Figure (cartoon, one colour):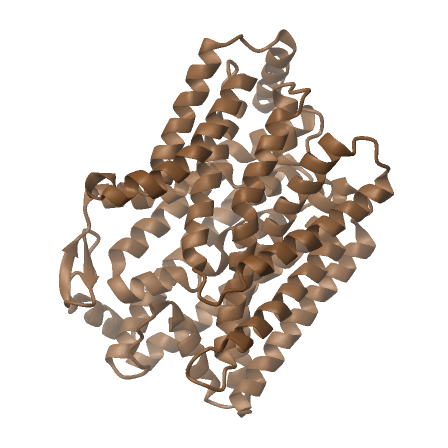
Length: 520
């Protein structure tokens, strides 16, 4: 084993020990009941709220997906995707965060999104809660698997002794990192996930900064990076893309831009992000959280796009090889850094730990969201209504383990697509929950039947558009989140207006929340 590999392994092992330590610390400090286990007892500070929300959001897409798109096709696709995500992040913090935090406390102290839906509409039969939980399981369990798969592919290939990743190497790496995630999440619950996500966001930031400094210096400065981009057809253009196969410029039309920007709509329905809003200790601090989160997202996404463009310059100048898979650009640069000695190898290990952090910070949050849906919203509310607190905690932790095992099974195939699963799950949550959340928070006339119709129609339209409509191509080749989001919004409003208005109790509660927000 080479010195560089040993240095990288030391940094990664140290990082893994650190997050395990966070899990043990969280276990001793919290996690004695399910409210603390799944929502941290609403004790998050403003900085942890902000950074854990964004770390759990970005996943490995920030350090692999965005740079990979920019490396292969240039500025347009990466920019419009990043811009949609950044704007969606800001609007979610601006319009949803404080209102959701306030409403969930007033509305039966709701600790999960499905419970909030049922409490908001006085759904005594828990239909909304169970349907929401089923949707979360459908989209989140494969999402958890995609995180495990990303870890397996990344570190299995990194430490592979051959040019190709073997199935055994993939399985070994995936299981090791899955066990680490399962351990600290099962032990410390939401507080462990949020605290580790906060530190993971710092490591991710560090990785981005080091890569940029090294990459720019390696090609001779910022001017060399820009000159390289301008000399490639369609590469440095917001209205065109570079086609690597032909070397030509391809039009990046209006429909494509709208479809890409639609990624931002997903934020309004992401359970693992919305939980951070619900968990902050002092809602008055959400403005600070919003500023921190927004600044970090805009800068980190912008830097991620730049790394892809910079990586292209490094390839064309012979600093690194030409990559068939642009998503490997940060990994290749890290390996190059590691070749400069032991200290450099340790530094490269921290950079790669940043990619691991991006993946783990999303996987732990998704794992908790899926597990809470099964244990709280299905098992407890439907089948085991009278269980004691101790048994409830045992079931909560056991559910985390069971969901994890299913995620590992889903990710067992090394050829499984990570980012296709992410894209589909993102659309599913955005369409099924986004309009429901917005109308529940902002429209007094919204009722149980409208919420149910919007949730089901949005989730169903994701499948219909993805597999039946989008393959027709042309103007219909739109990311499924956009049409499904619109359909869910229309169904929610239409069915609410066609059915009985909410009760006086629900209406007064809604008005009390609005009044509370005005006076805050």
